Image (cartoon, rainbow, N blue to C red; front, side, top):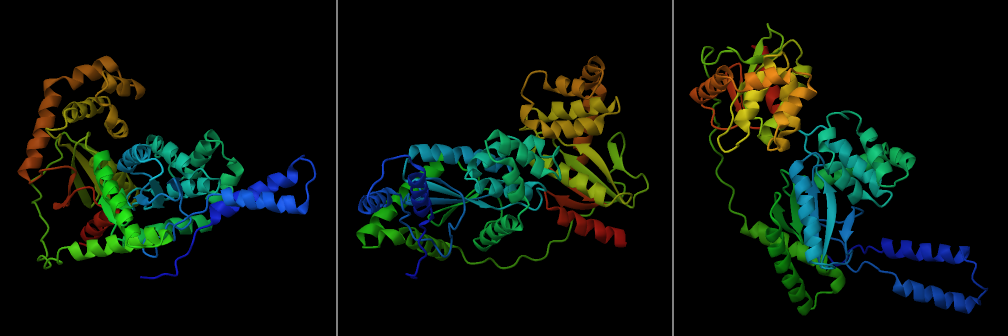
Length: 449
């Protein structure tokens, strides 16, 4: 166990400096040097000083902290600022802080996912707000604006500045910090730390070193926090210095997790990709985007109520931009039975297609997929796109469009589609919301042929 831990005294020193500054600007009567020294000593004694040494393995460092800085339980959160599940988890952590006042602190670390193009600049916006002490306010506000990310693609500084003004930051200072390479390096440092700790997706949490993956319910977090509070009491009873509790607890819990980990499985034999024949799929009445003579055709089977399909829609847009003239996309509806609004959404897209606005409706549906349960939402989207709503409703409820949806589902099942999204790149199957590099690898291989 290392005992040369770094102590964090920053907040206490800052508050002392502020109190001294106020004293210099005060209009209070003159006092003797002895009285001034006595007052300063009293003020210093009242300042909160962080009691815990940092951990070498999961350091808090200069990351934003929410809650009591000296709480016995530390939750280090790794989040991607474009991940809706991370936004959901943030609300759970707020509830956890209310349930355990003074006993829990949340430390925010960045883990922008490569497939989410706006995640890294959004993380930098949070870091820029952190320079003015409002990282969590910026984080919370950006999660409420996820729908705006596409509109601000490549311009996250502008969205961040807009939010900065709303939460009362110095906007010019925010802009300077947003463009500071040091803050971008901090985001990358968090990403490397998360990868070292085994983070593969977001959100991920380390509660005094014990890993909890995913946007778990409140009771799951509470169960772990209760165990960690007991552990802290046990460590204190064993004589562990209070200042070392966080570092010692992290070391203990990471070591326990390593010992409990099952042995690494034998490497599985390399799986051969599923390949279908040229005649197994056809364009038919399905909608196509991209050059007609493109050497690579991607058939996509997707559900408009599937969040992973929404993520893949953005990937496909990027693929079509990168491989302009070389790739075309054929969209096939594959509504899932347990998603009650996915089949009506499929019919809405095809109905918009009858008026030449399939791809516009395709984008709108994915952007507003959480609103499908609202009465009349499909009609509202049609009106927003400038469609003849009466004709749209007639087409949406027609037998012909219902049959097309059924036909595309049957076509998908015939080639082995069981879930969404699923893709066939010149007949080679790629399943799931994969990173864009996975698609590039397959596309480049087929282009070489």
